[in-house]
Image (cartoon, rainbow, N blue to C red; front, side, top):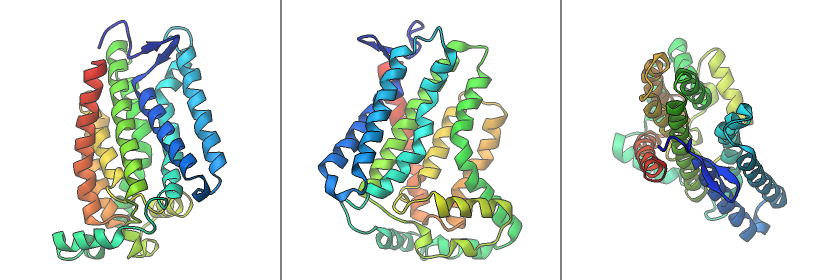
Length: 299
């Protein structure tokens, strides 16, 4: 990376970061889909207004981020996509019935049966129903919701004495993260699947605190249609690959937590085995493609 650029692409007075271009592209793409299918999207006008507001916000950040005066503004410019991911994910639940009515769960379960003889969602939990084991897997699953921002913060703090390397690693992390998330969300829109909870009662599983927390998240925040491939697994792998460059205690912890989270997606009943495999494959593929694009353009 050029030392003087700090990842900034200066265009007619605007200082854009690499992930700005990905976010702008995705929001324009989704806005176009909503406009074309305006009559088929509930509260379409509010979604359009929100997308336009986010686009305006990105241009506002790019206009006033000069990397020198307001460090908090630069931090927000780096971090803001993470604040949007939950909304964008839930939005796919509104859009995923435009192109295909219904869900592809029967097909995924068929693939599961072909690979495993019988889908792991029907036997994995039954093998280990103990409350402590169940609680550990639910904790591992819950940790996903902290993993993305914690990876950002860890890299930011770990490299605080090397501003150039910190900026480089953070920008690559955010680019690969946005690249992967936006690909997953696009897949969810065109290939919706509910996941393992179509066939199992996830609320009947045992556990303690984290089991209740995850149940609450699913009752209040989850959408139908974002199961294949498992973005939980794919994004966890992406976080691990970005942390590998900085090492340290969090990276070592993630070497345990990422495999645990991957198994938890099936154990807890949220995903099929094929979702897990798809998450592993897509996690590595999306990461390496995103990293290659980033380094070709900004490296």
